[in-house]
Length: 166
Image (cartoon, rainbow, N blue to C red; front, side, top):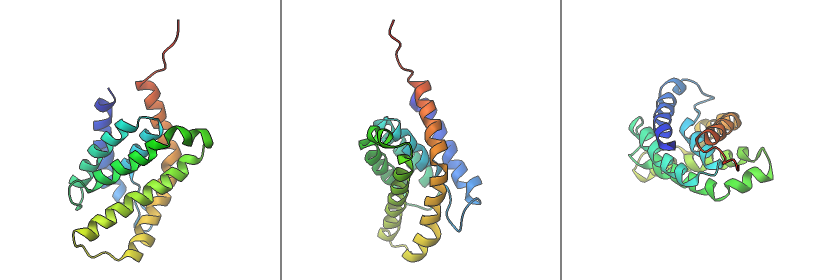
């Protein structure tokens, strides 16, 4: 059931991220809606599904960008795996810990994409990329983290309601 909702949701988020939110930004940073969805879903405790969503969302992102196919998928699967390792502990420690997780996830995601661009031979100015793109994108992602995480936690409760003992 989660995949029936997740795949269209990821396609919509990838399209919104590539079109409507391409003009919404801070410096040259943009919100990473698919990344936020993957991190939010991994935080609900659905790590395996988050990795599958990362693969699917990455393919959607790569078809709408100039990145080599599979680059975003690798980055998103890596992020989903790391977040899922600590998902239950994150919420137990502090309600604001998802902010820290998003900070690290966003920096990892963009760093993997940057390494992939360098690996395929594209010229990238590292200082410019970090200051004008990656850090502003991370800031925007941090602003959107709590609403997205709470929304996906609600979706998870709707898809997998707790069993009631009779």
